[in-house]
Amino acid sequence: MSEQNLPQVLDGDAPVFAISVAAHLAGMHPQTLRSYDRMGLVSPRRTRGRGRRYSPRDVARLRLIQRLSQDDGVNLEGIRRILAMQDEIDTLRTRNAELAELLRVARVAPADRLFAADAGGRVQMAERARRIFTPPRAIGR
Image (cartoon, rainbow, N blue to C red; front, side, top):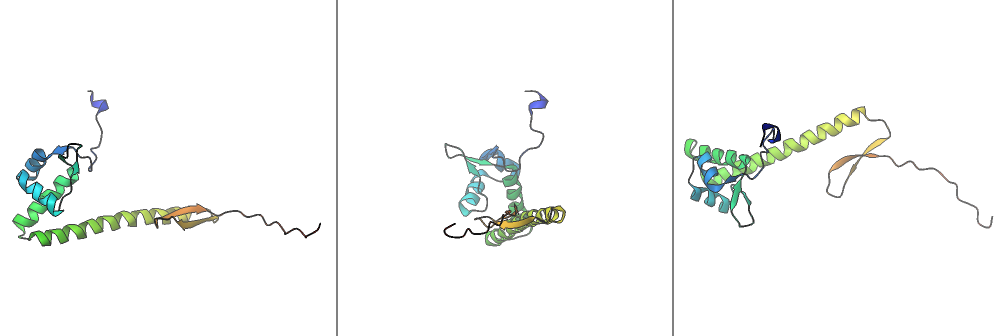
């Protein structure tokens, strides 16, 4: 395979590491990763044979768990709460970026545009429907 065919950027969510590799990269024992999976601290994807596959983002999360536990002395419940708050912050940052982009588009968009919410509550730009007034016809004519 030539370098031209290699991906230029590795997807941070791509499930590429087997449990042994992820454990090595995180500096943990594979059994610890299994425990963290059962506890919901890290949720790797599964292969068809039910094997765990960890992404680079999962490995980074495992390293964070290791640091919080070993260096900072945070217990597992504290780590669970920290991770939940970090996930919420990440979600809010993504939503904030989406809304900032909508605002940017709205500021440069023509005046005949409006915002509409879809069934899932996501805000999108929408065209105003152009209605042509047609007077009602008289009965009997």
